[in-house]
Length: 268
Ligand SMILES: [Zn+2]
Ligand SMILES: [Zn+2]
Image 1 (cartoon, protein in one colour):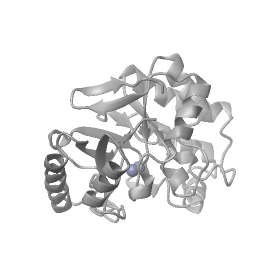
Image 2 (image 1 turned 90 degrees about the horizontal axis):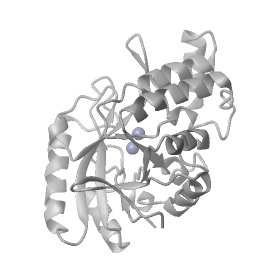
Image 3 (image 1 turned 30 degrees about the vertical axis):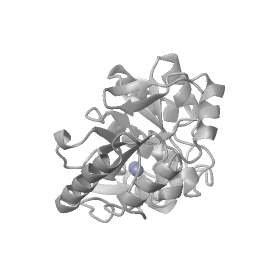
Image 4 (image 1 turned 180 degrees about the vertical axis):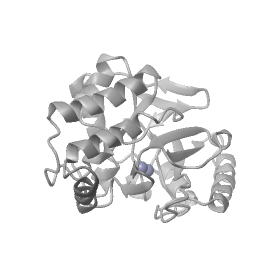
């Protein structure tokens, strides 16, 4: 089993545990590395992210943890940057790039808040055509070129296991997803297999969908397992299930983050 997680949140943003608690839990569970990825600051919505001050405190707390666990567990200071986050790249060990909003002429629509918000946005801006909303979402995803890791690639499907908001098997949907995917594969980005929505009870399967994972595999792309942990229980949660899924789909290039960049992991 892969015993490291690079997508974790703390009380500095919308997580429920402190960085110290997260590190202790990871260490006690025998994990070899823990990367923090607090939400980068979005000026139009500060409800869930880190301000400049929070970011300073976040980085100094993580640097204390790096010292504390030196030689025992590797600690990294990453950032989950939204497409519209404002941040200084140089301050972080890696960047997870995510799209949490659909930008419609400067109005920012939450992708992962409630299904009703998505339905209303489709109604109001796209003549009730949910697939147009999806196309806009994936256009924005294709712009995540500054990230090292692409976060929850198809977050727009968050509610689709419970409710058919749109037809994920339709040609239009798949074309828009695969076009964004190809753009990012051309730039050799690493894609998350994100189990966070399973931990939080929204889904039974990780992001992204199998047809996307298959394309990543066919093109020799790389994936990384992410718990998107918002508390100590979310760290590395459902990684065995995710690894089994990847195996069944023939996805082989599973990487982890190290001090010298991404490193391929053995399949077991
Ligand atoms: Zn996210
Ligand atoms: Zn996250």
